[in-house]
Amino acid sequence: MKHFKITFIIFLVVFLTIPNVNFAQSGFSYDTDSIHVVSAADEYVFYWYIELYNDSAVDLDLRWEIIESQIPAQWQIRVVDTDAYHPFGTDSADFILDSAATSLDKLLVHFFPNQTLGDGLVRLKVFNINAPQDSVVFTYTATGTPFQQDTTPTSINPFSVNTENHFLLFPNPASNQLSLIIPADKTGESEVLIYETSGKLLFQKSIHSSLTTIDVISELEKSGLYIIQIRSLRTHELLFEESVNVFR
Image 1 (cartoon, helix red, strand yellow):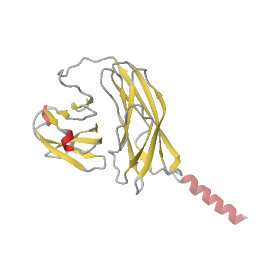
Image 2 (cartoon, one colour):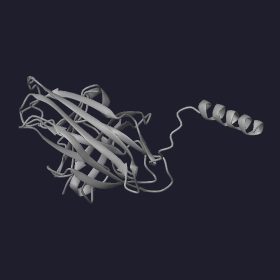
Image 3 (cartoon, rainbow, N blue to C red):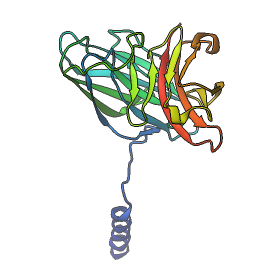
């Protein structure tokens, strides 16, 4: 009996000193479980993403489900996973998180405000199909603010903007072409690269002007989520990175 008590106490001490023990192993992790994006309501679409990481040695069969959606009546939403850019009205889909997953694997909710001010909220339940009891809920919120004065040329419809570095990527989604506006001090010694979410390089081109138009369809074989990067040719520094949805 005394031996049993000592063994139990040792086990209890060891158990309590293990930090952040997680017995629910779903096989994937993520950078955050909630995000909020603010944009002018006259933008065509605005969004941000949650990054998914495969922590196992095998491909994971995952599923997302919309469990809550509160958006203004005029708004629309679309979900983008690692496999597809899903049509309006899709409330659940399966997708694969490859065993070679990197931080480029993203789960997005696109908010289409349709010129309407307001706030939107979408919650996605994500789980491993083979272990449905292990799930996580991601919360996406968005605010459509009063319209901003358009200072871009009328021929340009900027759907996706990286304001921090003053890069402009549009349209997103893309079907026939993809345009990049690059700051003058970043041109001449840069290159644009297009990757699959698996990390495979599909396209590479040097940049020599402040407005570069790329024919996406001739370079990409299928619809899906791709990663656009701009790097310095001299130092290989990453100057810009953005995901783009392509449909054919």
